[in-house]
Length: 269
Image (cartoon, rainbow, N blue to C red; front, side, top):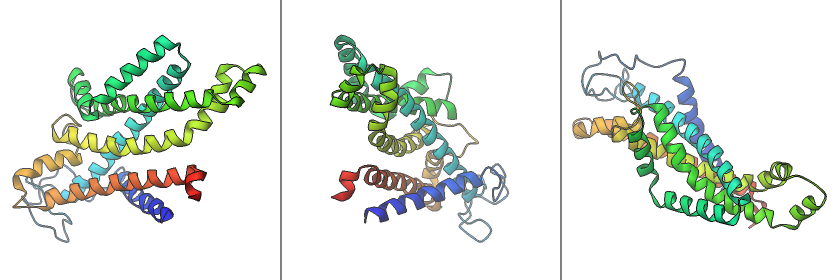
């Protein structure tokens, strides 16, 4: 059953990734072309119909997959690097600095990720794809940093760390050869879970008008534009909504599968 969950996650994420890569070289229609007629129902010519401006809706949803994965990968990478660095530094800091940083992380975690991302976007020059990645990544880094700090302290308390120090091994080498390999499985699963939250946060920012600006067709932006025509053309809400749910479910299934794969004790139970 756990292997099935992993394969379902790989399939869902793989489909979205394949669609995102396909948009780099091919699209069914020009995303800015408005020659399909307003709010046409799905047909062989337009698989998901057209939007209120006459643009092919399937093309817009495909572009949304590319934006969602771009933001998710960028934010997860940024949050992982910043969070891991801060967490390791906090674990090695003196008690006063460690307590201060831990309290700061707790305060940041108390705020919803979306709220922190909105504050970062509001403080920047304006909404853009790069701003969304920066905002969500920084908001995620506090969660990763707190986890890394706890895991690093747990590893540093082990006997093999004491033995390594007694043999003259420096702290830098201990971090690279002992700390990071031991905390990597748990941190990777946490980053994968934050990936899904980053996709949801990007869609939420776009829905509020704080994500990537037009003509970027984010799923959140498509949902916002389709809410006024939901009864006349329900596919406008269904298509991006299903795509968003499928990607987030796939990421969560993949994270659960990775946790079972990287944790031998869990895999045996």
